[in-house]
Image (tube, rainbow, N blue to C red; front, top):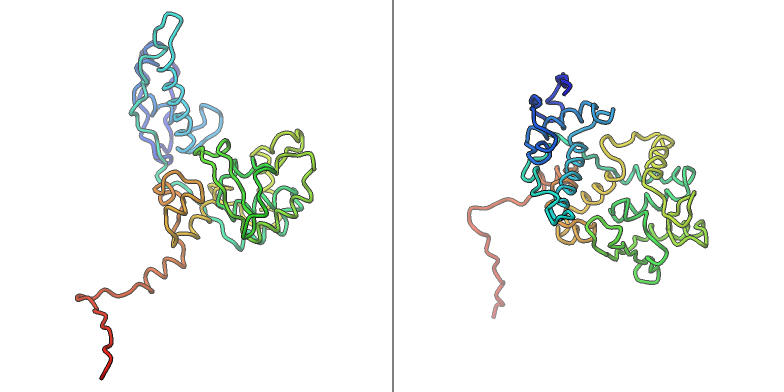
Length: 304
Protein backbone atom coordinates (compact mmCIF):
# COMPACT_ATOMS: atom_id res chain seq x y z
CA UNK A 1 0.00 0.00 0.00
CA UNK A 2 1.39 3.37 -0.99
CA UNK A 3 2.47 5.64 1.80
CA UNK A 4 0.21 8.68 2.29
CA UNK A 5 2.05 11.98 2.61
CA UNK A 6 1.62 13.91 5.83
CA UNK A 7 -0.82 16.84 5.67
CA UNK A 8 1.12 20.09 6.12
CA UNK A 9 -1.78 21.48 8.14
CA UNK A 10 -3.91 18.58 9.44
CA UNK A 11 -5.76 20.73 11.96
CA UNK A 12 -7.17 22.99 9.21
CA UNK A 13 -10.08 20.60 8.68
CA UNK A 14 -10.45 19.70 12.35
CA UNK A 15 -8.83 16.27 11.89
CA UNK A 16 -6.17 14.47 13.87
CA UNK A 17 -2.84 13.32 12.43
CA UNK A 18 -2.99 10.31 10.15
CA UNK A 19 -2.49 6.76 11.46
CA UNK A 20 -0.35 4.34 9.48
CA UNK A 21 -2.01 1.68 7.29
CA UNK A 22 -2.24 -1.92 8.54
CA UNK A 23 -1.84 -5.33 6.91
CA UNK A 24 -5.46 -6.52 6.92
CA UNK A 25 -6.81 -8.40 3.93
CA UNK A 26 -9.62 -6.79 1.89
CA UNK A 27 -12.15 -9.19 3.45
CA UNK A 28 -11.00 -8.30 6.96
CA UNK A 29 -10.88 -4.63 6.04
CA UNK A 30 -14.57 -4.19 5.31
CA UNK A 31 -15.68 -6.53 8.10
CA UNK A 32 -13.38 -5.06 10.75
CA UNK A 33 -13.29 -1.36 9.88
CA UNK A 34 -11.87 0.81 12.65
CA UNK A 35 -12.08 4.47 13.62
CA UNK A 36 -8.56 4.99 12.28
CA UNK A 37 -9.78 3.85 8.85
CA UNK A 38 -12.29 6.68 8.87
CA UNK A 39 -9.56 9.08 9.97
CA UNK A 40 -7.20 7.96 7.21
CA UNK A 41 -9.89 8.35 4.56
CA UNK A 42 -10.83 11.75 5.97
CA UNK A 43 -7.25 12.96 5.75
CA UNK A 44 -6.91 11.81 2.14
CA UNK A 45 -10.27 13.29 1.13
CA UNK A 46 -9.49 16.67 2.67
CA UNK A 47 -6.15 16.83 0.84
CA UNK A 48 -7.78 16.01 -2.50
CA UNK A 49 -6.17 12.60 -2.88
CA UNK A 50 -9.51 10.84 -3.44
CA UNK A 51 -11.19 13.01 -6.08
CA UNK A 52 -8.46 15.47 -6.98
CA UNK A 53 -10.30 18.27 -5.17
CA UNK A 54 -9.71 19.46 -1.62
CA UNK A 55 -12.87 19.46 0.52
CA UNK A 56 -13.95 20.29 4.06
CA UNK A 57 -15.08 18.03 6.86
CA UNK A 58 -18.75 18.44 5.87
CA UNK A 59 -18.09 16.79 2.50
CA UNK A 60 -16.21 13.98 4.23
CA UNK A 61 -19.10 13.46 6.64
CA UNK A 62 -21.55 13.30 3.72
CA UNK A 63 -19.44 10.56 2.12
CA UNK A 64 -19.43 8.56 5.33
CA UNK A 65 -23.16 8.97 5.89
CA UNK A 66 -23.75 7.49 2.43
CA UNK A 67 -21.41 4.63 3.24
CA UNK A 68 -23.18 4.03 6.56
CA UNK A 69 -26.50 3.85 4.71
CA UNK A 70 -25.17 1.26 2.27
CA UNK A 71 -23.62 -0.83 5.03
CA UNK A 72 -26.84 -0.74 7.06
CA UNK A 73 -28.73 -1.89 3.98
CA UNK A 74 -26.26 -4.74 3.44
CA UNK A 75 -27.00 -6.09 6.93
CA UNK A 76 -30.67 -6.55 5.94
CA UNK A 77 -29.91 -8.51 2.75
CA UNK A 78 -29.25 -12.22 2.33
CA UNK A 79 -27.34 -14.27 -0.22
CA UNK A 80 -28.71 -17.18 -2.28
CA UNK A 81 -27.51 -19.39 0.57
CA UNK A 82 -29.67 -17.36 2.96
CA UNK A 83 -26.60 -15.96 4.67
CA UNK A 84 -26.42 -12.28 5.62
CA UNK A 85 -24.65 -10.18 3.03
CA UNK A 86 -22.95 -8.40 5.92
CA UNK A 87 -23.06 -9.59 9.54
CA UNK A 88 -22.93 -6.10 10.99
CA UNK A 89 -22.12 -2.54 10.06
CA UNK A 90 -18.40 -2.21 10.84
CA UNK A 91 -18.74 1.58 11.06
CA UNK A 92 -21.59 1.60 13.56
CA UNK A 93 -20.76 3.99 16.36
CA UNK A 94 -17.77 5.53 14.58
CA UNK A 95 -17.68 9.28 15.12
CA UNK A 96 -17.96 11.30 11.93
CA UNK A 97 -15.66 14.30 11.38
CA UNK A 98 -17.01 17.79 12.02
CA UNK A 99 -15.74 21.18 11.00
CA UNK A 100 -14.53 23.20 13.97
CA UNK A 101 -15.90 26.49 12.63
CA UNK A 102 -18.41 25.79 9.85
CA UNK A 103 -19.33 28.72 7.63
CA UNK A 104 -23.03 29.53 7.81
CA UNK A 105 -23.66 32.74 5.86
CA UNK A 106 -26.93 34.62 6.26
CA UNK A 107 -28.46 36.68 3.46
CA UNK A 108 -30.39 39.95 3.85
CA UNK A 109 -33.49 41.59 2.40
CA UNK A 110 -31.64 44.56 0.89
CA UNK A 111 -29.45 42.16 -1.11
CA UNK A 112 -32.60 40.34 -2.25
CA UNK A 113 -33.95 43.62 -3.63
CA UNK A 114 -30.71 44.24 -5.55
CA UNK A 115 -30.67 40.71 -6.95
CA UNK A 116 -34.27 40.97 -8.10
CA UNK A 117 -33.33 43.93 -10.31
CA UNK A 118 -31.10 41.66 -12.43
CA UNK A 119 -32.54 38.17 -11.83
CA UNK A 120 -34.99 38.27 -14.73
CA UNK A 121 -32.23 39.22 -17.18
CA UNK A 122 -30.21 36.20 -16.06
CA UNK A 123 -32.99 33.59 -16.24
CA UNK A 124 -36.78 33.98 -16.35
CA UNK A 125 -37.10 31.30 -13.66
CA UNK A 126 -34.74 32.97 -11.21
CA UNK A 127 -37.00 35.76 -9.84
CA UNK A 128 -39.60 33.29 -8.55
CA UNK A 129 -37.04 30.77 -7.30
CA UNK A 130 -35.22 33.52 -5.38
CA UNK A 131 -38.47 35.03 -4.08
CA UNK A 132 -39.77 31.71 -2.76
CA UNK A 133 -36.42 30.99 -1.11
CA UNK A 134 -36.50 34.43 0.55
CA UNK A 135 -40.17 34.38 1.57
CA UNK A 136 -40.79 30.73 2.51
CA UNK A 137 -37.36 29.63 3.72
CA UNK A 138 -37.86 26.31 1.94
CA UNK A 139 -35.08 24.15 0.51
CA UNK A 140 -34.24 24.66 -3.16
CA UNK A 141 -35.10 21.05 -4.05
CA UNK A 142 -38.65 21.56 -2.76
CA UNK A 143 -39.01 24.85 -4.62
CA UNK A 144 -37.74 23.60 -7.98
CA UNK A 145 -40.12 20.62 -7.90
CA UNK A 146 -43.30 22.66 -7.50
CA UNK A 147 -46.07 21.92 -10.02
CA UNK A 148 -49.04 23.92 -11.26
CA UNK A 149 -51.28 21.65 -9.22
CA UNK A 150 -49.47 22.78 -6.07
CA UNK A 151 -50.94 26.28 -6.38
CA UNK A 152 -54.10 27.54 -4.72
CA UNK A 153 -54.20 31.21 -5.59
CA UNK A 154 -57.84 31.62 -4.50
CA UNK A 155 -57.08 30.77 -0.89
CA UNK A 156 -56.85 33.80 1.38
CA UNK A 157 -55.05 36.01 2.05
CA UNK A 158 -52.72 35.88 -1.01
CA UNK A 159 -52.75 32.24 -2.11
CA UNK A 160 -50.98 29.11 -0.86
CA UNK A 161 -48.31 26.68 -2.08
CA UNK A 162 -48.13 22.94 -1.46
CA UNK A 163 -44.67 21.47 -0.94
CA UNK A 164 -44.97 17.81 -1.87
CA UNK A 165 -43.65 15.21 0.57
CA UNK A 166 -42.00 13.35 -2.32
CA UNK A 167 -39.55 16.22 -2.87
CA UNK A 168 -39.19 17.23 0.78
CA UNK A 169 -36.05 16.25 2.68
CA UNK A 170 -38.04 15.14 5.73
CA UNK A 171 -40.82 13.63 3.64
CA UNK A 172 -43.58 15.89 4.95
CA UNK A 173 -46.25 17.61 2.86
CA UNK A 174 -46.99 21.21 3.79
CA UNK A 175 -49.27 24.00 2.59
CA UNK A 176 -47.59 27.39 3.04
CA UNK A 177 -49.17 30.85 2.55
CA UNK A 178 -47.76 33.22 -0.03
CA UNK A 179 -46.63 36.72 0.89
CA UNK A 180 -48.28 39.49 -1.13
CA UNK A 181 -45.09 40.31 -3.03
CA UNK A 182 -44.50 36.60 -3.70
CA UNK A 183 -47.93 36.38 -5.30
CA UNK A 184 -47.06 39.26 -7.65
CA UNK A 185 -43.82 37.57 -8.71
CA UNK A 186 -45.67 34.28 -9.17
CA UNK A 187 -48.30 35.92 -11.39
CA UNK A 188 -45.58 37.36 -13.62
CA UNK A 189 -43.85 33.97 -13.71
CA UNK A 190 -47.02 32.15 -14.82
CA UNK A 191 -47.32 34.47 -17.83
CA UNK A 192 -43.91 33.24 -19.05
CA UNK A 193 -44.43 29.60 -18.13
CA UNK A 194 -45.08 27.38 -21.21
CA UNK A 195 -48.69 26.20 -21.23
CA UNK A 196 -47.74 22.55 -21.63
CA UNK A 197 -45.42 22.53 -18.60
CA UNK A 198 -46.71 20.94 -15.40
CA UNK A 199 -43.60 22.16 -13.56
CA UNK A 200 -43.25 25.74 -12.35
CA UNK A 201 -39.52 25.52 -13.08
CA UNK A 202 -39.21 23.37 -16.21
CA UNK A 203 -35.91 22.28 -17.67
CA UNK A 204 -35.04 24.03 -20.92
CA UNK A 205 -33.69 20.82 -22.45
CA UNK A 206 -36.49 18.52 -21.23
CA UNK A 207 -39.68 20.41 -20.48
CA UNK A 208 -41.29 17.33 -18.95
CA UNK A 209 -38.72 17.56 -16.14
CA UNK A 210 -37.97 20.23 -13.57
CA UNK A 211 -34.77 22.21 -13.87
CA UNK A 212 -31.80 20.77 -11.99
CA UNK A 213 -30.18 22.44 -9.01
CA UNK A 214 -26.78 22.94 -10.64
CA UNK A 215 -28.36 25.08 -13.37
CA UNK A 216 -30.04 27.36 -10.86
CA UNK A 217 -26.84 27.52 -8.81
CA UNK A 218 -25.05 28.87 -11.87
CA UNK A 219 -27.84 31.36 -12.56
CA UNK A 220 -27.80 32.71 -9.01
CA UNK A 221 -24.03 33.09 -9.05
CA UNK A 222 -24.32 34.99 -12.30
CA UNK A 223 -26.96 37.25 -10.76
CA UNK A 224 -24.69 38.03 -7.81
CA UNK A 225 -21.95 39.02 -10.22
CA UNK A 226 -24.26 41.17 -12.36
CA UNK A 227 -25.63 42.91 -9.25
CA UNK A 228 -22.05 43.52 -8.11
CA UNK A 229 -22.62 41.57 -4.91
CA UNK A 230 -20.25 39.08 -3.33
CA UNK A 231 -21.48 35.49 -3.34
CA UNK A 232 -21.98 34.23 0.24
CA UNK A 233 -18.85 32.51 1.51
CA UNK A 234 -19.67 28.94 2.46
CA UNK A 235 -23.14 28.64 0.95
CA UNK A 236 -25.57 29.77 -1.70
CA UNK A 237 -29.30 29.05 -1.45
CA UNK A 238 -29.07 27.97 2.20
CA UNK A 239 -28.02 31.50 3.12
CA UNK A 240 -31.59 32.53 2.29
CA UNK A 241 -32.96 29.74 4.47
CA UNK A 242 -30.87 31.03 7.38
CA UNK A 243 -32.10 34.57 6.73
CA UNK A 244 -35.69 33.36 6.91
CA UNK A 245 -35.04 31.48 10.15
CA UNK A 246 -33.08 34.33 11.75
CA UNK A 247 -35.82 36.87 10.99
CA UNK A 248 -38.23 34.70 13.01
CA UNK A 249 -36.23 34.24 16.21
CA UNK A 250 -38.92 36.09 18.15
CA UNK A 251 -41.64 33.69 17.00
CA UNK A 252 -42.64 30.36 18.59
CA UNK A 253 -39.91 27.86 17.72
CA UNK A 254 -42.29 24.99 17.02
CA UNK A 255 -44.23 27.03 14.47
CA UNK A 256 -41.09 28.32 12.75
CA UNK A 257 -39.78 24.76 12.39
CA UNK A 258 -43.10 23.55 11.02
CA UNK A 259 -43.47 26.39 8.51
CA UNK A 260 -39.88 26.16 7.29
CA UNK A 261 -39.74 22.38 7.03
CA UNK A 262 -37.41 21.43 9.89
CA UNK A 263 -38.01 18.09 11.58
CA UNK A 264 -36.29 19.07 14.81
CA UNK A 265 -36.36 22.60 16.32
CA UNK A 266 -32.88 21.87 17.71
CA UNK A 267 -31.47 21.81 14.16
CA UNK A 268 -33.14 25.15 13.49
CA UNK A 269 -31.44 26.69 16.52
CA UNK A 270 -28.04 25.09 16.02
CA UNK A 271 -27.54 25.58 12.29
CA UNK A 272 -29.94 28.23 10.99
CA UNK A 273 -30.93 30.91 13.47
CA UNK A 274 -27.92 33.21 13.73
CA UNK A 275 -27.09 36.15 15.97
CA UNK A 276 -27.79 39.53 14.36
CA UNK A 277 -26.75 43.05 15.34
CA UNK A 278 -30.25 44.39 16.02
CA UNK A 279 -31.30 41.53 18.29
CA UNK A 280 -27.88 41.53 19.98
CA UNK A 281 -28.22 45.21 20.91
CA UNK A 282 -31.80 44.69 22.08
CA UNK A 283 -30.73 41.89 24.43
CA UNK A 284 -28.26 44.23 26.12
CA UNK A 285 -30.27 47.45 26.10
CA UNK A 286 -33.97 46.55 26.22
CA UNK A 287 -34.22 43.78 28.79
CA UNK A 288 -36.40 44.48 31.87
CA UNK A 289 -34.67 44.85 35.25
CA UNK A 290 -34.87 42.07 37.82
CA UNK A 291 -36.01 43.15 41.29
CA UNK A 292 -35.17 41.37 44.54
CA UNK A 293 -38.82 41.45 45.55
CA UNK A 294 -41.79 41.04 43.23
CA UNK A 295 -43.71 44.10 42.20
CA UNK A 296 -47.30 43.59 43.32
CA UNK A 297 -49.98 45.00 41.15
CA UNK A 298 -52.60 46.68 43.28
CA UNK A 299 -56.19 47.12 42.15
CA UNK A 300 -57.46 50.63 42.90
CA UNK A 301 -60.32 50.63 45.38
CA UNK A 302 -63.38 52.71 44.68
CA UNK A 303 -63.88 55.44 47.28
CA UNK A 304 -67.16 55.95 49.04
